[in-house]
Image (cartoon, rainbow, N blue to C red; front, side, top):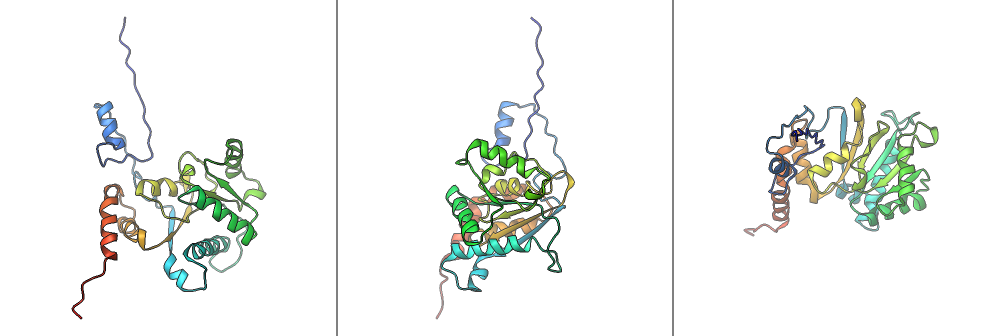
Length: 249
């Protein structure tokens, strides 16, 4: 029998290389002769994205809220309302779709209920694994639709929507709750600004993710590769910053 030469093409949006169980180490182990083709935008925030952040504690201190979660919901609503106006405060004639990322199904459900019941935001939908598959498939079609009724669609989702959604019609990604790591962050913000289009990313931040945010801002448009392995050390630094300092008084 003649030998068969098989060429495999493996495509990843991110290839973390920290730890023995990382994607890069697995590929190196399974395919020691693999050749990596890395693009210029790999593991970077693309220049066609506009990044903004809002400090939750600062916002909470500015008003009368039941608790921090209530403040977070109100801040999210303000962000959505502001995204429909231009710099002069005039309503936009064309509003692109928005993905709002949460950390859990429970959080997504609670936010969806808040927007619909408390804010009467009717053109919003849920996207997570507990949503019926047929409904999710229909929602994906709406995300890529050019219909007027879907132009200002707001989708409340978990990280299930951070991968595989390929559309140029999502103009805004909002992190209602900040990504748990840099890989998730890159996948989330990668849902907008696709195929050379422009996109906006707005993050609600708090003290618990301030160090990660600082590293992202420090990197700018440089690679975030070095931040991948910093999750544990950044968490330690955050916990250390919360400890009361010794005083001479």
